[in-house]
Image (tube, rainbow, N blue to C red; front, side, top):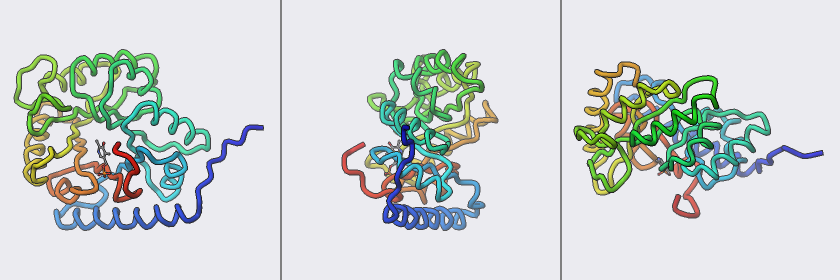
Length: 248
Ligand SMILES: *Cc1c(COP(=O)(O)O)cnc(C)c1O
């Protein structure tokens, strides 16, 4: 008989519980400082490089949303976790190649990193037929407009990477639902400057797409600033699970 159980070491559970308590307190404090109810902000636990057992342990501690940035790792982890009956909401947060769309739509509930019309079309094709409801999509924003890195470009009329064009492509795709925006503060930018600009971009997007209410911003180092500027989702890895052994 195959054993599908995933062992969570008790010491690890204690470690994760402590990390979760600290992160939840930071989120609550940041919400209080911003005059926002704490339940407005969803914690996405970024479990990349960490094992399926950590996802199971976090779910047992009440974490509902999990983020991963590599398809191969995420697909295996999602299958292992589902095998023991744990079903978190899986967020794909990494750079995504179009040839991985077919795999990602099978386990992801949200893809946060859509930054081109072509990628939106590939996800739509993959999602249509493979899923019984549309895939939630966040358009990733390049806050500094550097086209060499990931993210759609706000205020730029590029037919492939312009933010308005990418958002319209997602909104018009039957297999996708435009849920909002995601961003990472650019290196070398003050988080407050980056997230203030992101908030302006988000307000403009909502004028055209009122349902696009999600704003995924803020990580271990800058979640307070992101919450101050309206983040509805923070993506926290190292502050919760520990420093990653490798860059990921
Ligand atoms: C790894 C990662 C995170 C989490 O980063 P930490 O600094 O470990 O909290 C958040 N967002 C994205 C897109 C990531 O790749």
